[in-house]
Image (cartoon, rainbow, N blue to C red; front, side):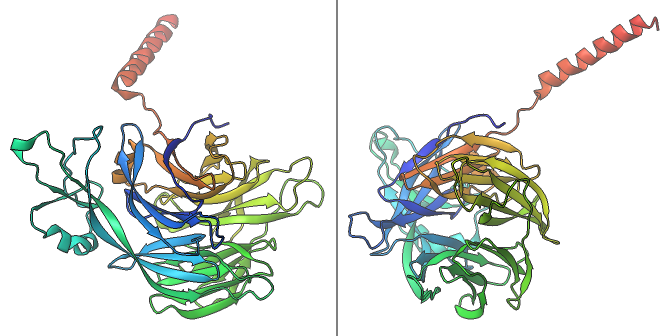
Length: 451
């Protein structure tokens, strides 16, 4: 059983967040809002910069954008070679935004007067340099970048004015709406897009929602490639395989299918058997692919299922790991009776994160499906989104050199980070003591045998 832990509060927002996504090693995007209801709750995109704070990290807001009368309920973010692009589900539409780096000036508070200068590293990309080239060439600005691959510039402080407030400059983003197009055409009830994904392998955007269709769009033209009549009920989740040639869809109709991206044909159906009695029905809740040991050519599929009907005696929920070649179940584990709401997989494929309707958060080891981390009632209400921070060294330095870090959001307006520390090692002293103990035991054994 995983030890009970406690998450760290990163930020509180004034809107219910429904979507979260990484932008860079040190930036996360959170979106949501009150929708078109005139209740005074804003519809917002917030971007936060993560800053190391000893053994953990803190979040500072660097971008605020009002999305108008509609809230973003789902999203994906990708880089098109020049800028970051946000594809956001807003009712039956998919709204595309361009995110461009910009330099922010910020006067430090009395509790944070000093600024650590940051140096350039190899992870600083040429795309980032193009985005802020004009800002870097402004007068009285000295070029500098963070060690996390995100550009930062700082104004020179005069030596004769050491007590004056210097200006800290951070990297934020300009959010610009580009294009909006309809992705769901449900006629029985109100249409709405429920999920959007992107694969850079073939530059295809996939959307799905209330009408049960999975639609594949060619980016950047956004021309419709395939309209797949996938399910008889709304689609809860979809995901591209790392190879980009398959897409999986799961629905409230209880079915899960794998489709060929090239022609939109069905590859297979996901079928499973549970160690349960009776005729209790289970439905898929979420699906995600994950690579194996950092190898993008080797990957698994992960899914979660919930009981279709809640009973007085609650039934267990399950986490599955599938062979992504034959699409058969390799391993499954019961996650308990708390209904699952959301799932994610780390970019290196080592960890699976789960959120529940009660607000709890769990982290599993993807290889063994062993529970590694558990926070009971991390949120006051159901978890709406999960996102692992990148697994590279730059992100780990921000989080305090953790083995992995998972961020959770909920309609309780809290953004919480969950850290899993790296496994402790014996160290040099421990190894020496173990070696001496082995020598002593050998000596005792030899003496006992009169050798």
